[in-house]
Length: 443
Image 1 (tube, rainbow, N blue to C red):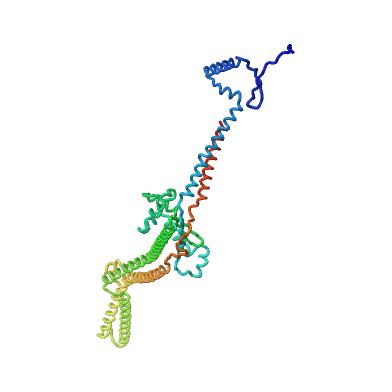
Image 2: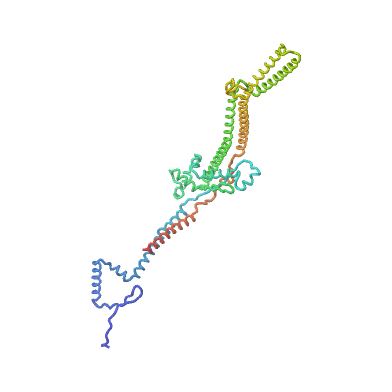
C-alpha cells in the first residue's frame, strides 16, 4: 500500500456553462504563489494595453452575454416604468381626483324658407335640388360662423368667457386660462363647443360644455340668438339682392325712355310740328282736293271748248286756274317728297324739309319711344313681382331643441382619457424598443 503512488489532490471548479474542470490542488504556500503570479500577469497585461476583463469575456462569452442581457432587460423594464407606467398613473390620478366635472347643454335648429313650393318643384327638392339648395348653403354658413372668430366678437358683453371657463382654476388641463390671444381663445372655444350639421335633415346640432350647468345653458342661448340674427341678415341680404337686380333694370329702362323723349322734344322743336303723320294726312287730303278741283276745271274747259275759242276769256281763265292748281299740287307734293330727285339736288339743300324724310325720322323716334315705354312698364312689373317673391322667400330659424339643462356631469371621460394616455405612451415605448433592437441587430 505504501508503494502505491498517490494521485495529486485536485480542486474542482465549475465552468460558467455548466461543465466541470479540475485544477491541481494548491498545497501550502502554492496558493499565495499562484496569486502573486496572477497579479503579475494582470499587471503585465494592463501595462501592455490589454484589458483582462475583455480577455476573460472572450474566453467565457456565455457569462458576458447573460450579464448584458439581464442588464438590458432591467433597463427596458425600468424605461417602461419610468416613461409609461408612472406618467399614466399620474395622469389617471389627475383625471380621477383633480379634473373638474363638465356639464353640457344641447340645442338643435334648422334654417327654413317661407317660399311656397310649387308641385312641379317637389321632385327636384326630393332629389336634393331646387329650393333646398339655398337653405343648405345657409346652414353651412351658420355652422362655420359658430366655429369662427366672429361669434366670439359678437357675443354679448355680459357673457365673460374667461370667467366662465376659469371657474375651476385648479383644473389647469381643461380650464381656459387668462390673457390669451384671440386665436387661442378660438381653439379653446371649438374644444368646448361642438357643432355638427346633418345634411339629410338640414339640422344643426350644437353642444356646449362648461363647469356649471347654468353657464352651458347661457352660452347655448347666446349661440342660438347670434345664429338667428345671422339668419335674419342673410334673409335681408337675399331680399335686397333679388330686388336690386329688378331695380337696376327699372333704372336702365327709365333712363332709356328719358333719352328717347329728349330726342323727340328736340325733333319737334327743330321741325316746329307736333306730329308729322298728321301733317302728312293733311297734305294728302290737300292734294286730293286740288286734284279733284283741277279735274273739275279741266272737265269744264273741255265742255266750253265745244263752242268757245281757245282765246276766249273764259277758256284762258280756266287755263290759269288749272295751271294754278297744278302749281299748288306740285308744291304740296314737293313738301311730301323729292319725287325721285336726290336730296342734295333739291332747292332746300339736304332735303330734310320734305315731309317724308321728317316722317321717317319721326317714325324711328316713335318706335323707339314706344319700345322704351313698354320696357319700362315691363321692368316696373318685374320689380313688383321681385319684391313679392323676396317677401315670400324670407329665411327664418326653426329651433327644434331649446338649450337643455344638465343634471349630471357627462364630461370629461376620465377612464377614456386615462386609457388613451396609457396606450399612447405604451405605443411610443414599444416603438422605441423596436427601434433599439433593430439598430442593435444591424450593428
